[in-house]
Amino acid sequence: MDFTLTEEQQMIQDTAREFARSEIAPVAAEFDDSGEFPLENIRKMGELGLMGIEVSDEYGGAGLDTIGYVLAMIEICAADAAHGTIMSVNNSLFCNGILKYGSEEQKQKYVRAIATGEEIGAYALTEPQSGSDASTMKSRATLSEDGSHYIINARKSWITSGPYARYLVLFASTDPDAGARGISAFLIDTERDGFHRGKTEPKLGIRASATCEIELTEYKCPVEDRLGEAGQGFKIAMSVLDAGRIGIAAQAVGIAQAAYEASLNYARERKAFGREIGTFQMIQSKIADMKTRLEAARLLTLRAAWAKMQAEKTGARFTVDGSMAKLFASEAAMWIAHQAVQLHGGMGYSKEMPVERYFRDAKITEIYEGTSEIQRMVIARTETGLR
Image 1: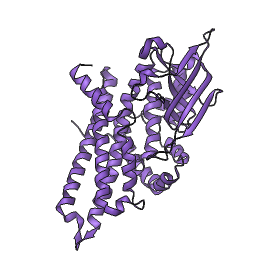
Image 2: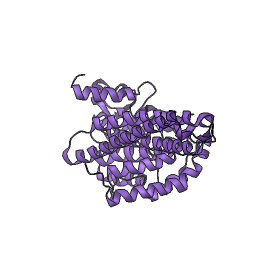
Image 3: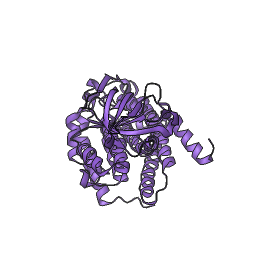
Image 4: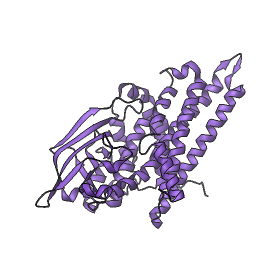
């Protein structure tokens, strides 16, 4: 494999790193503490092309590839995973599905506003009673008698960016008797009548990425705002999650990278028994294992990004590549963050140091966009061909 970055990939990585270090890192702890949504920074990220990296310039994006997206995500998340979460939803879960399944009118109306950072996007699949088993959703969309619009009644939970999103990709059943094949996807304007935001969730980590419940009551969605064909929603949802898992893997790598670098610096500076703790074999063992897992996670994530780019040319699936990257990177991030807290000792447990935030932020990467258990199921079922 050729690991040389293209000029464009290097450019977006450098842009993301510079912004992350100068604009995000200095305020990350403050946003984590307050839980305030970093709207101003998100607008700036949109101006830099970070909110629509794989979106072509005709729709307001940067027009780069998936590897460029992964590189930028790692840099942003190394500074603050919450900023990266918002970036990931806009790029992977919102723009990606519309670019693949949307009409030209939908791309111009919905993708452009999100890719430029003018508006915030969200993805509404999870419901209070259906998380991993999305096919059991209770949300309903009924076509009006004249066929001009759908009437949607839905309740969704754990909607990332929900409190601030202008537009959402939402999934609801148009044919309940058909199960997963009866689910359709819709583009929702949150400023229309019938849309309501619920409580904002108090979260353990990624606290600046606002998350809430939403409810649609007799919401009228024009038929031209259905994404793809009726009954194609479950396929769209799973396709979008395939791409989204690569973004979460990149987020995990960013968190792991930050935790590792903090540990490396602490091992060099902290002294005990008259010497730097990095000279002790047990600390050296931790550093070696942290570095190895970090680089393995990085390579799996870049390979998944490469597989997605090949799939776009050939039509092949990259589901397993994305699942393996997310599974390994998320568990590596959690392990590395755990070791970072341990290596820092009492200071690792204090909010005066950032490693406790990395520890809290890492956990969600094992849960959202498919838990580690779901990733293992996806990988095993695909490899064995058994269900």
